Length: 296
Image (cartoon, rainbow, N blue to C red; front, top):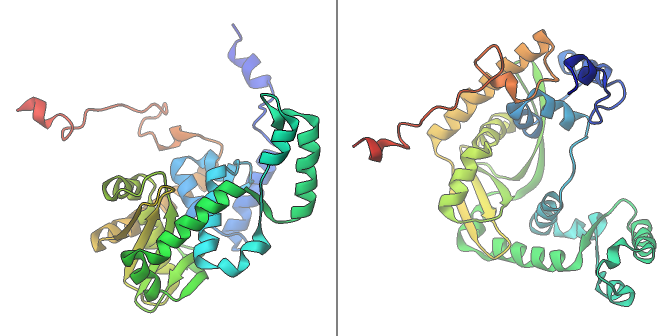
């Protein structure tokens, strides 16, 4: 078995060259006002300081779900820009010509795909079937009575915003904004009203809402989230004022811990940063609400 010294002396394949220098550069930029934070980067920090750094260094993998979500956003919010941003391709014919169990693993397919990449240029390549499905989802969003009402309240789309908070600079994009309301469009596995309201909590969408309402400077009071799934489900959620107030408190708390992380130089820590114990271990406790029926 390897001892600790042997383990620590081995290179970490997840590390990039001069990672610590890059961390120092990121932190210095944030402290001087030359760098920016966002909801995405702060939510990464909420997970762990290391995830925040990975996000800023762009070492996180872009998933198919992320590309699909951005495609739906474009079709709903800025459809006129779709062909500038995406190239839909159908590889069924080339796969049929190649044959075999794994046609995409062949040299012929890879050469064909390289040609598609060259044709796409800066555009993202998306599968034709995904594109067709995204078109249906976009149509559902535009025609559903609840989401249609919210869209009408927010005529400004993909509105960029910048703001200062607790001596940090922030940037963001609001999917839709009006004089009295803001909305965010989310693609999700299941738009069921109960499941998505759990997503609002688990994914900290209330934090994003609080940040954007504060940073917008337009005086909007209402924040809506339009949830859309691939099978046609649509649900629209108006965030309660108390949830927004909690989001602001969490916003302040996270930036307080962010400052602490800067002062203690702990940006390479993982989830143990959030442990209340000095050894970084979490204690799994029973939830009284979870067991209340058993205790009766």
